[in-house]
Image (cartoon, rainbow, N blue to C red; front, top):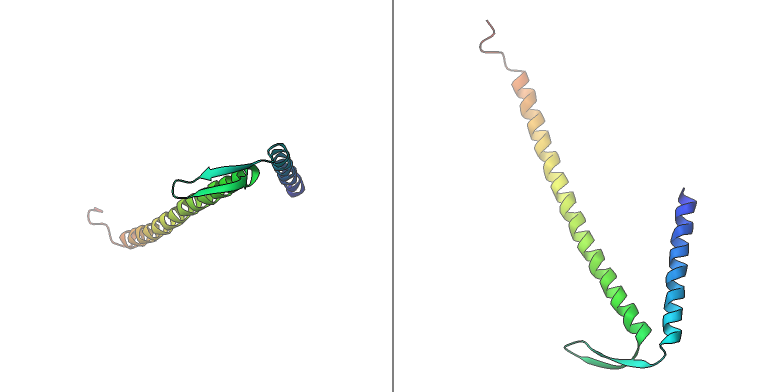
Length: 101
């Protein structure tokens, strides 16, 4: 199963590299980028798209990491609450019954 997963990852990576090569070959002319705060002239289109892809990937990684950290904190809090509830339940089970008659 691991070998199949690695083969699929390799094929996807190979496909992405092939798309990047075709994009770079078919768009050799430099373009101008206006980023709102700066203007960059003479950047190839493939580099501009690769940069946008990398920034999007980085933003997604940071967003997923923040969500993962929030989930870890929630799990830690819930486990602590479970420990307190179990301790309280254990102490209540040890008490004698008031109306056992």
